Image (cartoon, rainbow, N blue to C red; front, side, top):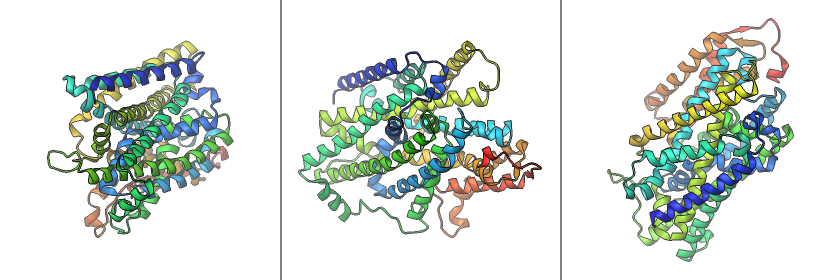
Length: 497
C-alpha cells in the first residue's frame, strides 16, 4: 500500500477527531475537563468504553495471539464480566456517595495523605507505562509501514501522535474524551469486522466453516486444563476478574469516564452493558485471529518473523491486512489509529486529574479558577512529554507480544491498590498506619516479582500468570493488617459501606 495514502487516511481521521473535539469543548471549564459536568449519557459512555478498554494492544495482540495461544484469552474475558459486577455493586456506590473526582481521595479519607499519594503514584506509574506501551504499538506499526520508507526516524511519528492527543484534549478534557471514544470504538470495530469479512470472501468460506476448520487444527481451543500452565482456565477466569477490578475499578482513567454519568444508576447501567459488549467484541477479535491464521495457511502467506525465525504475533494482523488489498489496509490503519487515540486521550486526562487532586489538592486548597486552569494546562503538557519519552525509550525492547507486558506491569503496580482498597472496604474496625503504607506498597510488588521468578522451583512446576496480581494484593492486605491499629471510633460508614 502506498505510504502517501496511509498518511492521507491518518490526516483525514485526525481532522474528523478535531471537529468532534471542537463541538464538545465549547463552553468548557475546569468542571468539564475533570468531571464532564456529570452530564454524560450512560449509553454513550458504555459504547465508548469498548474502544478505551481494547486499545492498540488488544487490536493487534489478541488476533495475533491466536497463532500461539489459540482462544485461551476468552476465559480472561469472561472473568472481566465478574469484575465489572463488583465495580457496579461495590465501587461505584462508594465513589458516587463520596462525590469523588479522583478516586484516590478515598485513601486519604480512610487512611491518610501518605496513602492517598501512594495510591495515586502507583496509578501514575502503571498508566504511564502501560498506556505508553499501547500507544507505542500504534506508532510502531505506522513507522514500519509508512515513515520508515521515507527515512523518517521513529521519534517523529511519536511526537506527532502525542501532540495531536494533547491538542484535542487540552480544553475539553474528559468531556471531549467521552465523545471522541465513540468515534474510536466505531472505527476500531469496523476494522475488525471488515477485515474478517474480506478474508472470508477472498477464501469463499463462511465464518462457521472457517471456525470449524480452525477448531480441527486446534486454533479455537479456549480452556487450558493443565493446572501448572500460566493460562490454565481457572487462573485466567480469576485473573480476569481481578484485572478488571483493578485496571478499571481502581483506575482513575477508566473510572473518570464512569463518574461523568448523571447518577449512580446510570453509571451502573453503563458498566454492566459495556461488560457484556466486551465479551462480544473480544469474540470478534479472536474470530479475526482465526481468520488471519487460516488465511496464511490456505494461501501460503509467510507470517512475519523476528531475527531468530520466531513468528511475531503483533505483526500478523498488519502484515495480512496490508497484503490483502488497498481496502483492508485502509480499514486497518483507521482502526489502528482509533485504537491508539482511545487508549491515550483518556489516560492523559486522568494523569492530569490525579496529579491535580491528589498532589496539588485542587479540591482542598483555595485556588482561583484562573490558577486551576493555568496549573492544569501545564501539568497536562508535562505528562504528554513523559508519555513521549516512555514511547521512545521502549523502542529497543520490543521483541514479543505487548499484551503480556501490559498485564505484567498491571500485576505488579495495581496489586498494592487492590490491597489498599480491599483493606479499606472490608476491615471496618482497624486503620492502617499511614506512615507504613508507602513502604508496604513497595515491598509487596518486590516479593511478588520474586515469587513469580522462582515459582517453578518453589511450587512444583506451577507458573504464575496474570493471577500474580491477586498474590500481590493479598500480600499488601496482610502487611496492612500487620501494620494497623484498632480504632477507638468505628470507621465512618460512608467510607466502608
